[in-house]
Amino acid sequence: MMANLVTSLCCVVLAAVVVAYAQRRSQLIARNQYEQRGSDVTMQCGSLESDASVSWKVNGTDIEAQHQLNGPKLILTNVDLDHNGLYSCFQNPHGERRDTILLHVGLPPQEPKVTCRSNTYPKGFYCSWHLTQPTYIPTNFEVDVQHKHRPLDVQKDPVHKNRCHVQFPEVFSTTPYEVNVTAVNPLGKISSFFSFEESTIVKPDPPEHVTATPIRFKPRRLEVSWQSPATWPDIDAFPLKYFLRYRPLIQERWQHVELSDSTSHTILDAYAGKEYIIQLAAKDTEIGTWSDWSVAVHATPWIEDPLPITSTTEVDFPTETKTSPIPSSKAPQKAEPPVGRAGRVVTFFSPLLLGMTLLFM
Ligand SMILES: *[C@@H]1O[C@H](CO)[C@@H](O)[C@H](O)[C@H]1NC(C)=O
Ligand SMILES: *[C@@H]1O[C@H](CO)[C@@H](O)[C@H](O)[C@H]1NC(C)=O
Image (cartoon, rainbow, N blue to C red):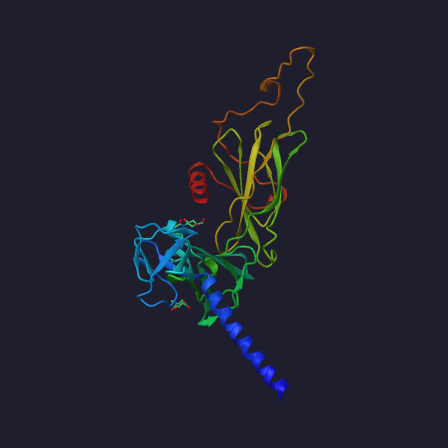
């Protein structure tokens, strides 16, 4: 009987302590208030009645007189980012803290820009999005992808914040995919809708491990080899074609060769001893667009060793006339016929070359 009473009493005391603690916490722990840039903001000190008198601090210092005080309300006009801060209010005359507000000034999101791309065709694709205007406050995105009115499984990218991955539910579908990206923050919510056909978003990654090596005794040749992008899952069923471009470092104009289904090519018209810059792009043989250019590699065709220098003091650099003759740069940049496994080599001549250059820049 006695024990029971003690237990009950204990419970009541404990409950009272918990309630008091919770109340105190709610006054100490800041609550967030989000407001739009340029708006007039009212901050209410807890649940105090309109006849209560309070004083406010921001970031620990007293609020300047220019701010309007209206009983337990603080009014800020035309707020901007520098109004962000920790606002606290204290009830007069004893100065107990009654509320703490973390003010976040920002903007509602604008329509996100969405793009989708498949560099792992036919496995899947990814979509990425960004906002064209900052919101200054945390903004989340919801992504919905549908095909034939069925929602598809959307995986967040582990590294890129604004990216998600989707598996193709089928291959060679002509029904468009529909992507709906919704941006949400405490000030607003807006959706962007993006629709595409499978064949238009295929864009491989650039070829990898590009090497260019001189060939001994061949002053006009460079042997170029590369590998298909490792991200491309099935090179046998979905072959790639390649686009090779090369130029001497000192010249502006590229020469181009398109190669089907081959991962090496011998440049036959290089200038002896000139440093070359070489890049490759890849594309699915049937659909999609060209990849970006691979990382540039540099190589210089083989050149005959300069004659031994007899002088013992000043070093005279041999002039180019001692080596194989160098064709004038005005000479037509005609590629020689294809050789060996380079297969179908297409050479583009001046007007076409310019067109292609512009197209793939
Ligand atoms: C409060 O402090 C934050 C961070 O230090 C600062 O960005 C903000 O402008 C300050 N707010 C005011 C009103 O002084
Ligand atoms: C996009 O998603 C949002 C949020 O789920 C939804 O409100 C909106 O209606 C969707 N828009 C379209 C065109 O499906």
